Length: 161
Image 1 (cartoon, rainbow, N blue to C red):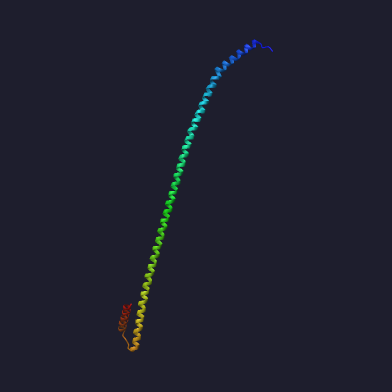
Image 2: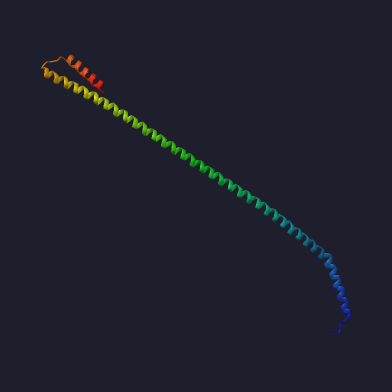
């Protein structure tokens, strides 16, 4: 196999011309595009790092606010429970006071009714005693004498107690 020097020479010249044209028109723009792409990637990485930092910061703020909200909710619940317990104790005390008042009123009413019954009983006993005494004496008494004797008997019965 023999290589023709003439073809080899023109092939090297063509390759050189092609290389020069490519270097002048394509290599520098290609390097520029690669440099621009490198800068874009670096900028994207920088922005991604900034966004990651911001996201971490926002997440930390979110966690802090959630903790604060939970603490606030616990405080509100505790206050509501405390207020409800206070109100319950207040209502129980009020009910006990009302029950005691009703009991006192009932005792007073019973005492008044007892006193009235005793008074009526004394008057009745005195009237019966006067009537019996009048029968025994077989004497007719006037209404005024009868009233005087009843009052005297009531008074003596009241002093006896």
